Image (cartoon, rainbow, N blue to C red; front, side, top):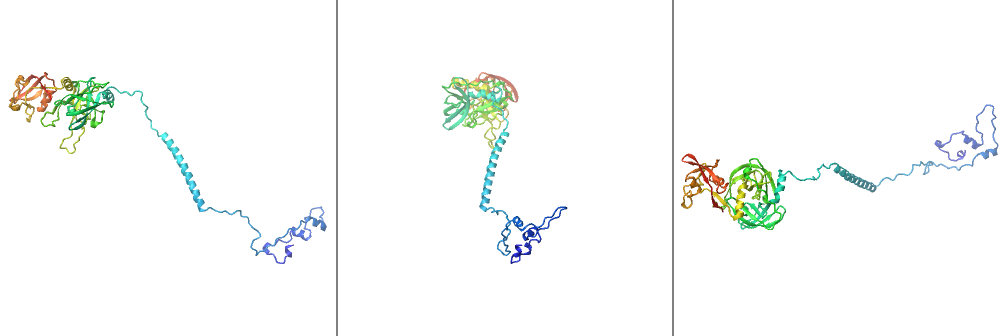
Length: 445
């Protein structure tokens, strides 16, 4: 072998086994051949033939076990380079942007789908928006075109009230305390149109006044009802401008009828006190409602809203607005006074011709002992004198209705017209007697 001819002995772990066929061929010694039954075993080949069969020698590489490189090199492939820090950061940022964009898109899509799914059912616009005529909405729709808001300016300041149209000539009925001492009066209709108005007449005793507008077309007068037909429990609707909130509609019932109410008296001499045999209602009425209509279920005016009862003045929790105690002048009284104010500018008051003792604390209204300026308490040849009433008599009933004081007697009398007959129950010397009289007339203030 060529390895055996080397000077340096080869390491034993690298030596080739002895006696292989390759070694034998290289030494020119025939390799042992298996014997086959009956076949000739050829002998050694000629040297030239052997030389022809042997491939040319391959240059041998000497192995130096002490060399710097091993003879066998294992190919482990290309060594990975790994990830650098900036690459990791860039990859993370890209992933976050991709995730955020995808999440935002999916969120918007989900929101749209969710909004669509969560849309609540709703009724469509009604083809017929009308209401029953006797409903609150039906009454308001019929009456609002005839209700106005009054803005008044006077020497003592300005204020707001309400009124309603009486006729096509432009007459409007309201409260006296709305227009008292007015220098300028502006009337605003439900359409928003505003015009100036002039005072026709007013009466402090009834707390009623009439103003007039000119040059306004399409006026819608309200229909007047009959307050004698009103009963406790009847539904009513009030329209006005509480605290200057025009065209405000409230509803309630008639709480009482024939409720004696006095209002005013700010002047101190009694000339501005109004006496009203009122309709009481729990429909909310507040400052600014004064002069507005109180309507029945047929949208007919049955009263003129005029006063409210607040909490006691000494009550620290006093409420300035409505507490469910509102009072309206019966339309029968309002109609008569309005007609007189339109016709003459003044109203007449029914009287019995006596001076009352307003300090009397007993039950009933006592006729005084003396009248003003030392005159007799019973006017000579007046209605009371003709009926037989004397000084010191106590009037306890009017037409069978009990009277508890002087104010109530005045209210009961003013609920009638001059010339109306009355039946009075009088207490004299401990005995009751019934007297008939016919009401007289006096000019109002």
